[in-house]
Length: 250
Ligand code: PXP
Image (cartoon, rainbow, N blue to C red; front, side, top):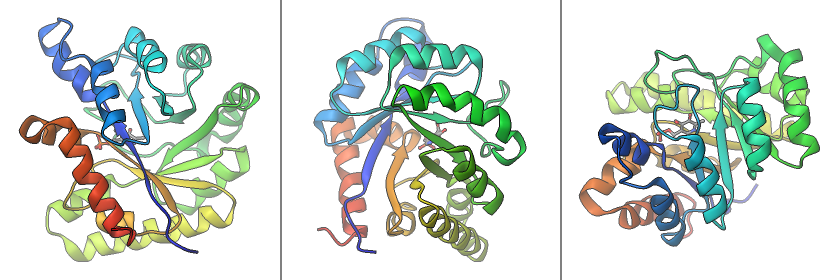
């Protein structure tokens, strides 16, 4: 298959993390979402966690109202979140595992071990025309279960690949990259749209961005951190430039 432009979804959760550190109204995640849109983001991703540690209900509603690009609503597969997401009517929902004590999303969703419940859980989203994504590790059982229950998209968890890259453990990194590559191909063959995300940075994004079956990357923490030094617009534009270069588009 030919390489085409890769979509960049910018995750703005950590703008809310900084805001919440002081308990006031700034920095405003809606302003960040609009700035990201202006800088060329193809979508905005936000995660309404059960504990509301960053994005809050009112943020999600305000972001959905303000932006013209697709909103990807990340959430745990709970009844509470299902209600909120159905009312928000995002372009897509991305189901992620969520444990209160973790700092971020540590591992992928166990679709294979919870397939009957998840099939029923996603049905109202499919009826509403909302695309459904499963955030999973690069494991064949999880890819096949995602296809079986009728998910539209899988988002491959790049966290382990990124950690191994960043720690300079290149043999292990390459083995994990081979797993991501094989699962991207397998998922595409099953008719799933393939996204990837978690832990991506300027330094580690290229080997993931070159995978032809991957059509979207969701990137948050690194971009928001880089924005402290260069501004949000330039950080997004630089990520865009690296992704385009990886696809041979610049
Ligand atoms: N994709 C999913 C499903 C996630 O849970 C996260 C983290 O919230 C990301 C992408 C973005 O990861 P990072 O903030 O490390 O770029």
